[in-house]
Amino acid sequence: MAAYTTIDKPSDYFNTVLYTGTQQAHNITGVGFAPNWVWIKKRSGADAHYIFDSVRGVDKQIQSNSSAAEYDYSGDTHRTLTAFGSDGFTLQTSEGVNHNNQTFASWNWKAGTSVSGNTSGSGTAKAYTGSVNTDAGFSIIRYLGNGTAGHTIPHHLGATPKIIFTKILNSASFPWWTYSEVIGNTHYLRLNGTNAADEANTIWNNTSPTSSVFSVGTNGGVNGNDNPIVAYCFADVKGYSKFGSYKGNGNADGTFIYTGFKPAFVMVKRTDSTNYWFMFDNKRNTSVGNPANKELYANDSSAEDTSARFDFLSNGFKNRLNSNGSNTSGGSYIYMAFAENPFTTSTGIPATAR
Image: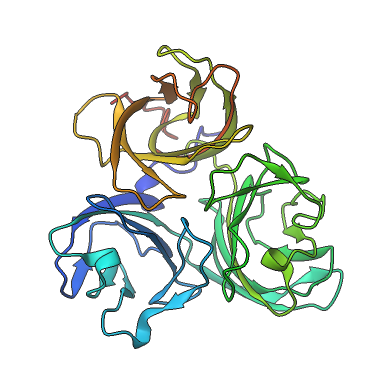
């Protein structure tokens, strides 16, 4: 009989680390691995989400709550993330990531294997570079668009991605175009917006990703000729990550979503109506048990808020709030979740609820 999961220790691939800013050079440790994607948000005050990755390089940030182009802090007096380390990362004095006495959350993912080559499909082949972890179903790909419908971008996962976040790096004219298998290849979401799922054939070219590539249309935000674009690609990994959907029931005894693991991180977005991208994790909660009650919003710069939306359970999460954003009756929602513990490890040891 095959093992339930190949990942017994999910924190080897994803981990949330909390810290307090110092406004001085600051080594953040305790991640547990060398992170390749670091997403930072101030909790105690309003500020942007700062996103860094090892493919684009240190000091280069983009913001999930904004369509702003990539900004390189390396020439600024107050720099941001200046090194990826073996157990975390190093910050400098920028208030966005290291404001003195302010609290922050960092979400960290491991990729690690370098990849490069040329794109394929229609039009002129273009160069790409990336970092991938097939065990964890995660890749970071930086590619150049070619302006031709049917341009295909290798993602190197060896499995079909369930969700892809893309951002053009040299322009503020386009949002974070987001693919979700749930809403299909004719629709898209905006990570930096509250918009419901909308329809266009110029983004994903009405073509679903395969186990080797994803396809883009003529939209400049995903395929403008010679425009640099970054894509964060995720595939399901049993017992570690899950990307799916559910229907709300408008009840405090809400919908239960089975993931096959105790969640460490959950992000939810309503797709049939406008609302926020809600972010929860297992490190920011003030109580030992449920509910998970500290929320941030991927599309918004607001400080952390308190809302008892979800219980984190040994095998999934459960709605505990009648809310348009996460559990209105008949509402359609997508989610992405990463594990604290698999429901059952490869050796048969079960997880427990919070």
